[in-house]
Length: 308
Image 1 (tube, helix red, strand yellow):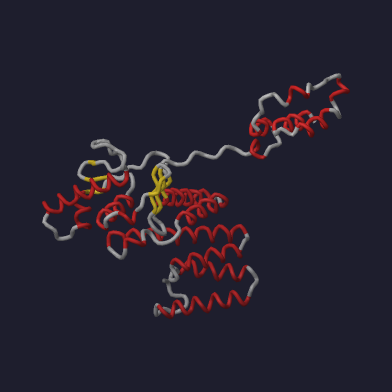
Image 2: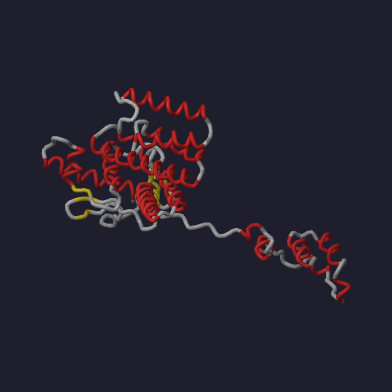
């Protein structure tokens, strides 16, 4: 009642406060000078709530600090620095491609010859070098509009190349994906099925969509797309195997189907899908999986039992 009375006083509800107080205080010989309560400075309601251990906000843990930068490359490029999204559509095409090149190897230098080969193929080397200096200067101003000349930090010169140097603690989906894949493989070697599942799900969650789809078809990005796609399919295979070992064929089948959306010609996933459907005691689903597998083999000119 004392806490409730204090809260009523804080919100200037003196009638309710008096009703509550008069129900308990006289028994203890206490008395509140109500004529002076109205003149007292009001206590902010949030102070009362903060002191009340039953308040939902008091039980909520503090939110983790926002990362200094976020970089997403799967499913489309998104870059956020200091909580502000970089408007990529406003950047000139070659400067945007320069950002993509550096972002694919974020934290590592990309040789200037490699950059010029991608951005100005067949151009005179001296002309390409001048254009590269202009493109780097433009990108620096876009990423750090408030920096003074010589104060740019995010695109430093590194030996014979340039590097995208996001601050420590930044969220980068490609790096997060690679770390999760490594952790899943290490857990599989240890035979830790629970950790395999956890890290495989983390990896697949981070690898959502094609790598840099806006960059279009080009050798410099297609190779990396294929690498990430193959890794994602292998992770799906690891996860499906772990789920089957744990005795959850329905979940394993779902993972197989998702993996086959990424690569419908990956033979190990087809075989795992059929095993999962058989283990689920669903003859119709198992028969459909076998039929789909045989059609896929026929598309490749292979017979059942051949290795894909």
